[in-house]
Image (cartoon, one colour):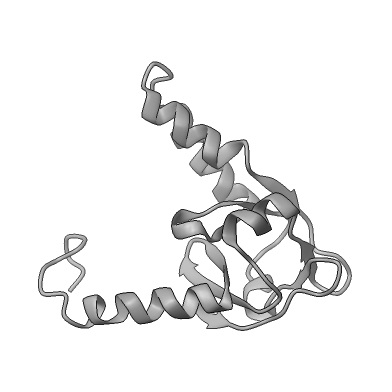
Length: 143
């Protein structure tokens, strides 16, 4: 399970030294794709395939299914770690997420999100009070 927030930097070749705490939980490749709120979502390759299989169960006659599938699958990038534990982040995904050099790498259970640090701090600040004052269940059984 991926948890916590790490604050690495992109190097000059747009490579990210993936946090060792996360890398130790991954055997094999990762897939980067568009994430919600304009971040980059990172999945273990096997978890990504499960998501892709779920998308394939949607009806292709449904415009929302087609749109979401295109956003998720067509903008995906399979990456493997190099000898230093780095992955490359392509220009298209960097632009999607508005990523500069300073990053927040956030563990969210089954996936990881990569955010531009300033955007992450703004998002976290904006949503913190909502979290603190949540008075109804978001998911059954969760507080």
